[in-house]
Image (cartoon, rainbow, N blue to C red; front, side, top):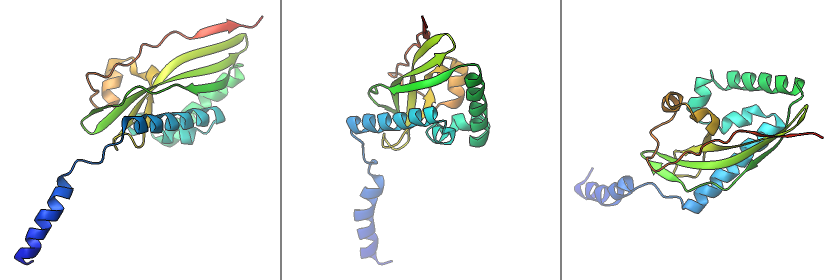
Length: 179
């Protein structure tokens, strides 16, 4: 390589290689998180658990024994619930909070509401998904907030969370009895 070629490589390539990855605007990251969370909820209601686990944080899927084992577990649980008279009827996604970045990850909290009918009435559980992105918020994988109450379990599956990230308290489910 000639001296001129080396200088050109240094002058032109090094700044490109050293540049920060492109940032995603917070509103674009929030829109992408909401769209992905909506897809997860829709897949859950349709029973497309393969798609649900495509939207689930990879470490969680691994902890569940892999995608096929996770699908089998959830399918069995939902079939049992349906046999007992429970039916999931709606999965609503709220507006995501602000994205926060720590290290290689961007995090976001996406509120959700799961509704179901029971043999005696209607149940509603408000919750949230914790979104994780490794591409500054362009794409998201999720962990259900209900599984994050246990600090040990949370630390086992998640990377270090930003100190400013506040995980919401989960309210108890509400139940309305049929008349």
